[in-house]
Length: 103
Image (cartoon, rainbow, N blue to C red):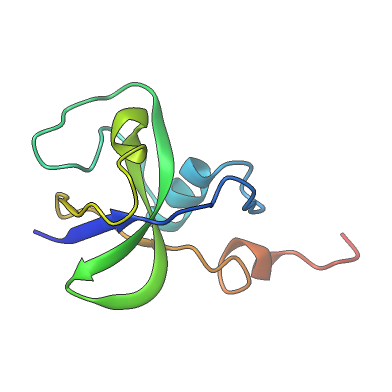
């Protein structure tokens, strides 16, 4: 199972999808049914959380569905998540790439 940690200071980050949870849904092609943290079955109050992949390592920022409790785990604290789709958080290559500035 992947090991991740939350990315600090993402409150002001925006995307074309309206929310980061919508961004995850659009990229994953599915609804977020539950928090991705192993052992958590929370189905309410989900958000699209910005995370780093620690194991397996990736230098990119990703979005996964987390409940608000697990989205508030302090950066630097690692936690295990289920085998969930990791949506790339780079809006210039994902949702932002779909829109022309003239739209």
